[in-house]
Each structure stands twice: as structure tokens, then as C-alpha cells.
Length: 530
Image (cartoon, rainbow, N blue to C red):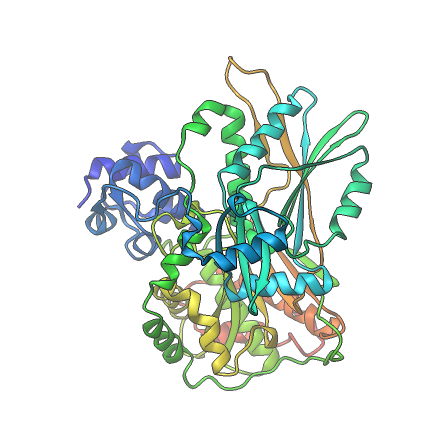
């Protein structure tokens, strides 16, 4: 077991509180602990000799119980560093090198991509989907060479950013190169952005592009990446590393490299797949067929997000400190979907970041995401707390099995495209207006900040995203209006917002029947309270 002093230091660092405030009975959530700070706890713990994982944080959230569950650890289970390309056969490497227009010694590694990131790459080839663009504005007193060097250093230390994709023998392979950044130069931001977003990442080409735009008065760096090499957490880590580099370049370069994306994939392959599939099969057993009201696209058409409904929801914590707000939101979505489809046994898919699978996974840059089936069973006699506690317990118990949820669901005829896709963005994930600057008397002043994020339309039919901001929640429901009616999606957006709000302000011992009566009007063409 770890020492209380060490764990107090970890809590103090991650939660930004004084160690004196932490008592044996202190609850993690009482200090603002959430999913983001949980990952921070896990990342910090090894430097204090502690072994800690996200599951322990949420199942044993009081200080004394968490302390009893922790263990001493000498080193991380996942280490950074280069992976030798010896794991791939020489013929495969030569074929990949030829497609990329490179020599074999310019390739660091070659490995197969998972099904989801393969899907992103293939759909991008067809329609240009799944391409993201982040615009950084440089302050006038930030040295441009220093700013570029920051991106170059991060690029050199991360496999994911040096990726190219090549299809060989009907499998998409990630080709991690040893090449440095190639800068594209321009003098008009608008022209560069427009041209860049319509330029596909073709097989063998870099999956990440870097643009330097120097207009008459302002300078911008544009980071463009295929979704196959990044997720929202990766973009946050990119900004974290930019900030660290600009604060102290020497300290940043002296740090060990992050664990590689391939090291994460290797760990997944070592998991007990059959046990995970059995767990998911049992979880989904007995689920009836459900169908949202949709219109079919022509066989030659792909779905695309072309409409959005945005709503702001007052942020109020659940009255139970051990209940996460994200768990309440997952339950709320199940309730309103049940109302709109007249079902009390609902399933939908939630996007997860796979940052809790192994120690060190929270530090990996790459597209570490999957779709996880979420099942909500609504019983009128249950209390609100009963429902949310079960949703949260199900989520925690399946953290280590998430990579295999979608595959199992597909075999039971439950597919992501048949339902609603949900994504919860915890605090700290939003990049807009985030500043990365140089501090300390030995440095000149200067910073860069994110001023714009955009992407080509995702090739999916819908997604409901909730952003957890400091003072409120922001819900964005995007959908393809060729598939879903505006009326249905409006009822879903308004109903979800109302149910989530009611679940936060109601007494948690309130029976579900009472809450269900509150949402009876949704789906009947009426507004709440009319």
C-alpha cells in the first residue's frame, strides 16, 4: 500500500488543493474531481511511487479507501520509446515504403490499424470526411521560429503525428516514418484553410500537415490531421506539450517521450478477448430491436452531418457526490430516447477514449477511441439514483473491456448507425481561446492561442455532444436531415436538455414515474409545460 503522505501529495497536485484540506473521509468529487482530473491523478501517481488507475478512483473515491487500494509501483507499465520495424516483415515494409515514396530506412514502424481508424481512412478516401483543422494565432511578440520549433519537437517525439496509411492485402497499415515536419507556407489564412480542407490525405501521404501563414499583421500555424491519428484528448495533449515547450524548451526536451500509439495497440492484443466479449454479450442479452424514425439514403449516398441544434443547460451537480454528471447525462439520453420510441429498454452508443485501459494510456497521442454500447432499462418504481448508479456502475465495470463492445453488439444486430451516438467532453477538452505562452523572467513574452477548429463533415448520421464547461453544459446535436426529420431531432434535443436539468435538480430519491410524467409532452408536437 502507498503512504498516505504520497497520496495526499498526488491529490493536492491534481486537484489544486492544500494537503491540509485532505482528511481520511474526504471524497474525491467534493474537490471537483471528474474524469479529467482522474486521468491527471493516474498520470502523476507514478512520480510518487504509486500505482493508481481510473477504476479505483471512481469505485473507491474516499481518501482512506483509495489509499487502501493503491500499491507501490517502481515504473510505468507502458514505456515510451521507438519501436523497431523488425516486427513487420521486410516485404510489407518495402511495399509500404514504395507507396510512400520513401526508403526503408526512413520508416520507423509498420503495423495494422484497428477497424474504427481504418474506417476513418477509407471513408476519407471516398468523401474527404474525417479531416480536422486547428488554427493557432501567434502573438506579435512570439518568435515564429520558436513556435515552429515547438511543433517540430512534438512531431518528432510522437509516432501518431508521423503516420501515413497504406492498404496492403486488404488491410490498412500505419506507416510511422522518421521524417521531420514539412512546412507549407501561405500569405492568406482564408485561402489556405479552404484549400487545405479540400485536399485529401491520399495513401502514402502524411496524415498530419503543418501550415505557416504570415499575413501582413498576423501569423498563424495551421495543424491539419486525419481523424485516424488523433482524438479530442490528443488535441489537448498537443496543447499541453506546446505550453510546456514554450515555458521551458530544455526541460521539455529532457522529458522521456510519450508511450507510443503502437504500444497501446500491442497491449489491447494481449487482453482476454473472449472474456470481454462474453461480458458484453451478457450485458446486452434480451435487448429488443429498436428503430428510430429514419429515411433511407440512396445506395450511392453517404451520411453527412449537415444540421446542428445547440442548447445551453444550467450546470448543477447531482445531489449525490459520488455520482458523476456524465453518468446523469447518459441516463437522461436513455430516458428521452425511451419516450420518443415508446421503449423502456434502450441502447445507444457512447464514444470512449480508451484512456483507462492501462497505466500510461492517458499519455498516449493517437486515435484511442471506440464506440461502446450503453443500455438503459427504465423501471418506473426505481428512483433516479437507482438508475444513474446502475449506469455508472456498468460503465466502471466495463472500462477494461471497452475495445470489444461494438464488435459484440454488431453480432447482436445492434449497430452504431441505427441509433444515437453520444459523446461527453469533460472540462479541459475545449481548445478555443486556449493560450500557450512563455513565462519566466529569462524569456521574452509571447504566446499562441487556438482561434478556430473546423472539420470536414463526418460520415455519420448523427452525434449528440455535451461539453462540460465551468458554468454550464453546452449540448450540440448534429444530424443528417435527409435521414432524420427536424421535428424528431428538435424533440430529442429539447427533451434531453429538460430531462438532464430535472435529474440534477430533483431529489435523487424521486421515483422514475414522476420524472417520466415530466417528459410526456416530448414527441407529441408539444413543448414542455404546454
